[in-house]
Image 1: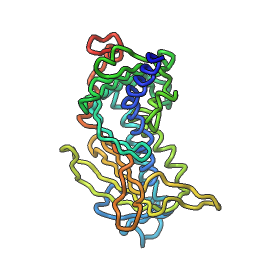
Image 2 (image 1 turned 90 degrees about the horizontal axis):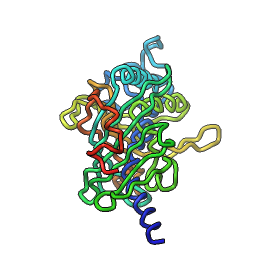
Image 3 (image 1 turned 90 degrees about the vertical axis):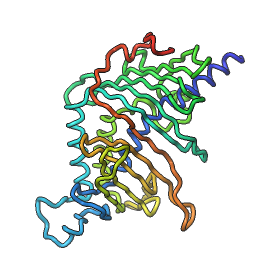
Image 4 (image 1 turned 180 degrees about the vertical axis):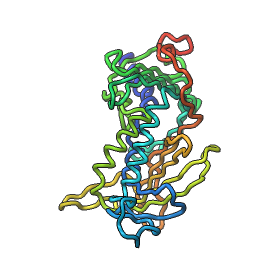
Length: 311
């Protein structure tokens, strides 16, 4: 019985850091589905209404160059980013830094080394992924590993804990209770391509939602990478549509877009302030550091028998 409890505890710890990357896929598209930023605007505030809201366009007569909906420029950008990502990027590595609030507890930041490779798929469909994750910080968690190859191993992920506990590996379904413990999304949602596809899908649906305040700053450096910083604010936690309340998932969301490579490299969201004058509280933050594309990842990088791994 003690051994069984140990295995369950081990599995929970191993997966606790292994699945967080999925948050990057779903969490980021939530912010984007409210964005209305024109690429040429700097230090402006917009509202997400069904008309062009740029001060330069507000008093101009309608034309083919004016967006029919404030989300249209974002959707156009997302489609360009997706097409570019599919065409140009076969794999990537990164150091992912995450910080999440689970319940009322905001956990300290942790860092994971990531390898992700895409496999060819039918035209128009999302490419399948293989992913390897290894926790590198904090020191108490360093050495945890997670390996998942889509549609292999019964679609189960393989994971093990750090240190001496890493002698035992476990196979878990991504949506299982243990795999999801302490995580917002399953590992099946992982990847930049999945993120962009969900952005487009959700953005089309959210055209009917109410206004949002959008702030855009260009030429913002993040780890010496020139980015466009986009901030979205929902003053109220919900809007009413056809007599029904539709809730927003954040008060403030921030996304840093690598302008040269056209990929999001940081996302963070915050809750509504508890009282007037108080600061919003962090819900989640995810940052891709040292992001490198097309590095030549091979089958060995996803082989549990790889001598560099401890599965």
